[in-house]
Image 1 (cartoon, rainbow, N blue to C red):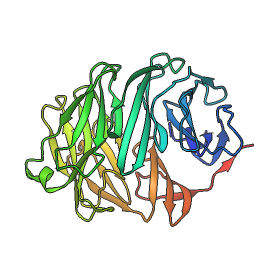
Image 2: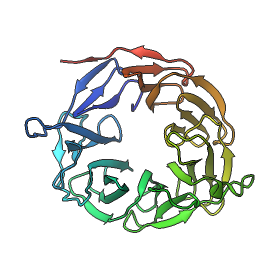
Image 3: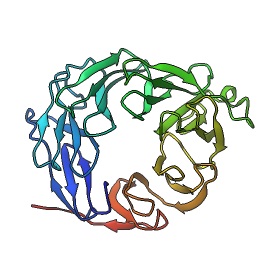
Length: 339
């Protein structure tokens, strides 16, 4: 959601917009044709109420020659970019976007093989003209990225998840200073009160990076065992004000799962951490207060600290829900599609 009234939605192959807070939706899908019987799925990124970028998968694969569609008028008209001819391959191929402004957007075409181990590959593209043309930046990298963000046209950060049962190691992340053309891997230090944490757990991963500037970085770290779901786990909030030279660490409540919960920021100090257990920070993540317990899993979007929406799922049922008191209470919206 872009504001208390305007927002976007994706439902399978459909792109939708709302102008009344989610009660009524208008279809705004790009005019993409496909073969009969093909199942399509839309992946997208949204800058504001007018600008969006959409990629389509067909039967769980984004074709190599796929184009990224973009709009500047809330989906009333769409323009396809030049074909990507990407090299991402796998049992499934999907798209993940990072949007800086109306002209500078990155899309990571990602593929995964699941079999004798899980193997990831990707190819990263950038546009500097709003989506008319895309430039390939890198590829052939076998990492499971959990988040990507850019502070400006040069500085960006990618959070990482290991892809196999390797020996215990510190959580890592990648940094670029040339807009994504090259990346440098970095490791995080353990929390001062838990110096052996990265050796005690077989997995320690970084999640949901946030950049307030090239020097002001936030991210989540989760450590867990081999079991799925984990039987033993611990999570931390990491923050740096000097570009990652030094870090402050805060242990998060035991119920927090960085791989699943959603971290949403409102300026430098205020943040929500949303899962089945919901928490609020008004101290730049240094303290967290309990807000609410729910019995559903949600995909969350907030337009301001008080106003939010979630696609809530529980026991095979799905509902669109809304809060106007910072996640303390939620009410069901029964949306309609405008004709």
